[in-house]
Structure formats: structure tokens, C-alpha cells
Amino acid sequence: MRFEIIVSLFATMLISAVLTPFVRRLSFWVGAVDQPNARRVNKVPMPTMGGLAIFIAFNVALLLLLRDQMPQGDLLLGLSWQVWGLFIGECIIVTTGIIDDIFELKPRQKMLGILLAAVEVYFVAKVQMTTLTIPFFGTVQLGLWGLPITLLWIAAITNAINLLDGLDGLATGVSIIALFTTGFTGMFFLPSTNIYVVIMIFTLVAAEIGFLPYNFFPARIYLGDTGALFIGFMISVFSLSGLKNATFISVLIPVMILGVPITDTLYAMLRRMLNREPISHADKRHLHHRLMQMGLTHRQTVLVIYGISLIFSFIALLYPISTLWGSVLLTAGILIGIELFVEAIGLVGENRTPLLNGIRKIVSSNTSKSDSIHLKEEQDETGITQSRLARHRKSNKKGHDS
Image (cartoon, rainbow, N blue to C red; front, side):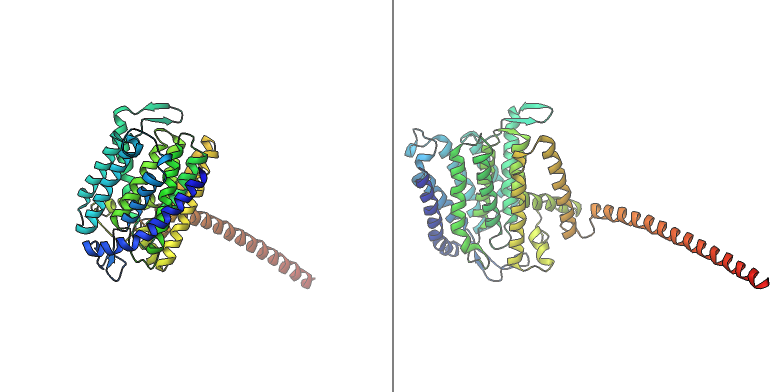
């Protein structure tokens, strides 16, 4: 069985790699092309809709190659409503992405597509958060709140991945790291995660790896909203599969794994609110923009963000082996570290650095006090020395007089 799964994953990579050139031609044919402009980094027209190759490879693998590993039922191909319900949600999100890549939807229209897919998987595929265990308070039954919390989670994660898709290979690479960590964590640390979910996660990783050579700098095709929305949607669904009965730790792990897109999204919202701009307003002050403005090349920026994503993933692996208070302290340290990094690169604004300013004031205050003490000591030493010299002169004068 394990050999069959491994072979299927390699086959998924090959299917994705073979399909991508055809999807590239299809993108030009239907007009799913990013034209160069002030906001975009591409200098020539670039085909989008690359996520369609990932979507097809992923579902061919699940519905055909790995069918026996999926929940069984009495529907088409002998699969359950859970599988087909998820597939319908995928089709809704991919259709939304394709329409956006071709015609460029407004933000609210795109959000409508995301919410429609989220509602479908909530009721049909039963992808939902039902309880939440809070430290010191116990388990809370979410009840009717389960629906809005689930929709918010799916919409937030989906949009976070979509906003990250700004450089060649960036969203693809970061999501591969995030998905691999999610699958590893689900396999070894979260017993509530069903094994078929782990197989689905690694199948999506395989499909993305097959696509990455075409998408990495210099890219020949972009993920487009077709791919970014699909990958973000699937990550949110996979993480919810381990959050049906959520705990403090099980919520923190996927949030930490997705630290890069979540941080970039939250600070982008804060930046626009402080600048009194609409939250959906596009700008060139995202994480990757700031790193490039600081002098990094396109490739260097992508690799640096890969490295940051790996750091978040390694930190996420510490939570399952930490105590509650250890997790609290770890989270506090990470939040402080993120804020320092964000202020250092000017993600919110070059003049908006409250924590760094506070540290500078403390250091400056301590330095001033230290300088004052040293100056006083020097003055005292100078006074003592002058007093000794005066006594010595006086003594010498008496000796001469005698």
C-alpha cells in the first residue's frame, strides 16, 4: 500500500509537469494573460491560470490513482459524499479563479466565489469547526457560531495565499513548505487527522512540485488566481480537518505554519487602515516588495521568504512537544520577533516603528545614565587628583621655605 501511494505521488508530479505547457498555451488562447504594468514585476505578457494544471493533476491522482485510499461510499467511483463534496467546492473556487484570470473580477465578486465554495464544503463535505477547547475555560460548543468561524477561516487563509502570489514561484514554494509541514504534523502529532487527509496533502504537494520548475524565476507561467485561490482553499480545508474539535495548540499550529502569508496579510490590512485606504486597495508594500526595495534581487527575495517560511514551520513543530505555558511563552516571543522584523523592513511604514522606538529610548536612557555616572566618576577623580596636586605643591613650598 505504501509503495502504491509513493508511485502515485510521483505520477502526480509527472502529470502536473506534462499538463503545464498545455495549460500555458490555453491561457494565451483564452486571454488569461498578465500584461506588464506599474504594479506587476513581469516585463512581458505572462500567461496565468497555471493552477489549472495543479488542480487537474491533484484530482486525477485522488479520484483514480488513490481512489482506494479515500473514504468509500455508494456514489460515483465508489466514493463518499465527503470526497465529492470537496471536489464540488474545488470546482467552484477554480472556476472563480479562471474567471478572474480572464476578466479580472472585483474583490467583492471574488470573495463571493470563495464564500460560496466555503458554504458548500461546510454543508456537503462536512468541513467545519464544531468545538473549541480554550485553556483554563474548557471546551466550548460553537453551535451556530461554527458556520461563520469556518467561513472566516477559509476566506482568510485563501486570501492570504492569494495576496502572497506576487513573485515567480513565491506562493507555490511557500505553500509546498506549509503543506509538507501540515502533512508531517498531521501524521505524527495530531491523532484526530485521518490518514486520507494526509495523503491528500502530500498529493497536492506532488502536484505543485511538478508545476514549480515552470513557475520559479524566470517564470514561464504564473499560478494566477486559479492556482492561488485553489491552493489557499485546500490549505484551509486541510487545516480544518484537524480542527473539527479545535484546541489551543491545534489552532496555533496551522497559523504558525502559514506565518508568512498571514503576517503579510494582517500588516497589509493594518497599513491600509492607517493610511485610510480601502482594505482591498492594491499597493507595492507587501513583504516581497519591501525586500526588493531594500536591494534584494527577484530570486534572492523569493529564497529569503522560503527561508522565513521554513523557520515558521520549524517553530510550529515545537508546539506539540511543548507544555501549555511553554507554548504561551513561545508565542509571545514569536510575536515580538515578528513585530521587530516588520518594523525593521518598514512593512507598515518607515516611520511606524513603535517597538523599535521604545527600545531605542530605553537604550538611550540607560546609555545617558551610564554616561552621566562615568562623567561624574571622572569629575570626582579629576577633583581628587587636583586636590592631591594642590597638597603636594603646598608641601613642596613648605620644604623650600624651611
